[in-house]
Length: 373
Image 1 (cartoon, rainbow, N blue to C red):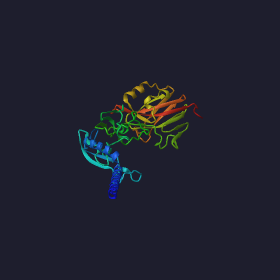
Image 2: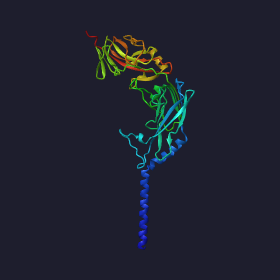
Image 3: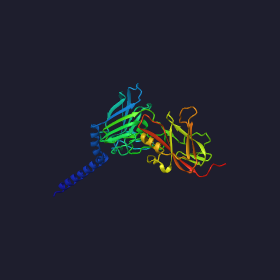
Image 4: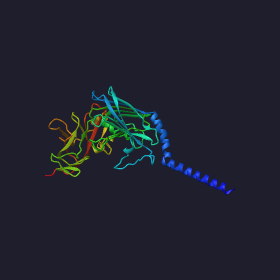
């Protein structure tokens, strides 16, 4: 074979290898192995948008339009064309797509449609949807869970159902933020702090129907952290101290035959309801690592009727002197325990708007040592 033919073959092989290497580098650069399937999925999500129908019970009749804001974040970065990075100084909002529009309110309903994904090489997905502006009392924030392919689970309280891409909710604004988290037993550790976003924007969502009552979802609190002092209590680190008693956000430790005013707060106008049981009779729904949770009103009423509070323990509620409830700890409970033991005190506000009630609890540990001189 002539030398020129050999040289020509070598050149062609080199060109072919360079072309293969260039194509492979381009595919790696464009994240082809990951982005192409997601791109096809994004096309399907854009062609079949999710439909939202939110009814606001108690909305001001003067509200004619509601702002809706959609945030889309990239799933697969295209290295070299766009920059996707997350740190404290520059969060990944840098590459987000923000779509804002107004939706008319008709018969208390806010209805709109939004694609869960956008077709394109960056594979944008809907990560957050906000209904209402910063100043509105009806502001709803929805988000995608950590794994957007997983639908939220059904939750008994309040009425939530997830089936075939249809999500239904009926309850309070506070519960909308707490539920749909994938946990069948929603609760919060801090009584007066709720989650901001409900993670319900999963990839299989087709319709979201929510009936949100804007009436306050009344809460009660034994939280000692925000107590400013008074009534003989003194702040000592993370707890309050009183003669023969200490109080944290979870536990009251008190000596036998000692009566102390325990700080208490409520958000309801009606008198709060209390039930105290020995620790072995604590209901299953309160055996969680938290301070409160929503409980079916029927379950709460049945628990109160059948709890059988110990005769050796009495609880007396002292309303605020002004006659008005307040979150500034104007009210107190007096707990008198004549027998040492472990108890749990439950409190709740009547909640006629909803089929559930927010039940708060405080563990009461009574020491055997009697009252001192």
